[in-house]
Length: 437
Image (cartoon, rainbow, N blue to C red; front, side, top):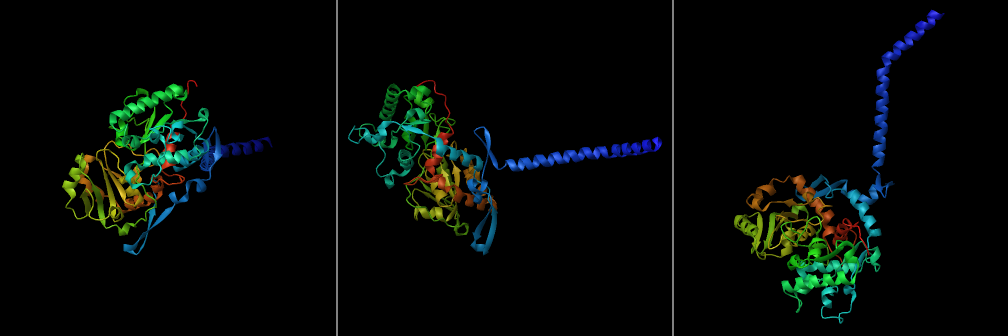
């Protein structure tokens, strides 16, 4: 009996020795499966305020950015399925943080923006523009619309102690046309004097050395506005259309690029890709721009290019509507409203402007809806554009329809418009430690 029991035990041990490696493998496979299930489940959560919170992807992200988009192609009398490559670096992260901003952000506006027009001969410099959609405002439209949108928003607080930021409401554009302050030197003196008054009358400036204060402008004169006040230049945030790395008073990690937009009352009707028979469109002055002179000299006789020195021979808007690519070429400044014009008309922007700190570049992946070309590569422009695969072009065209809302101003601000996207840039710079009140 004892011998038989020993033989059975020996057989069990023999089989265990044989199966033992496989049991270890089975345990490893089970553990990996559990980890993958947890990882998949956690994709529906975001880390917020120290805890994980469930995140409704379909609701917040908008499945149009993630699904296949159908693009009508009349020339082929069919449909092309285009896999949409999102123009956002991380939409989920941005959308969640944006909602937090909408609930939390507070901005204190200095009282000059609310005073009566009869209070001072300089009142107009601080007050909101009475007719912002006046076509004469042109390149300075964004400067005025930001102030109007901010003053009417829920971000404004009357309690400076709860504010994340402080808005200095002077307008460079108004100063430039003011009878007493129109020269560049006078504007610099006015801005320096106003900053000194703010820092002496209010404790908010001194609490951060002006680092949580900001001002907004689109006029090129504004780039030197802070030159006579060291702390305003080094510490405060300038929100500017002229966002150039090459500009001596622009500090990329501190300052913010403002989308430059011309007055536009209505959304443009966008032509489909197959209705765009010209490869390139550009119309503009060539003064003060070597890149524009080279462009005109090299490509003015190419029949696939619509390029004009000055005004085009047809309506300006038509050039954007019938072309696949629209050029933004550096002139006196790195910026022009041609970028937003191209986006609004569904014409893929080609950016030929070295040192341009592109607006919203920490949220938008510009390579997904535009082409960036170095100024020295103008001679190779046609080769570069013709080398873009058709599918890549269709993806960029589709993405223009997604991002166009970010390059538009409205009488009543809308979600994700130029105003809210610019304010979000401020939101990302919050959290400065205040030394005292």
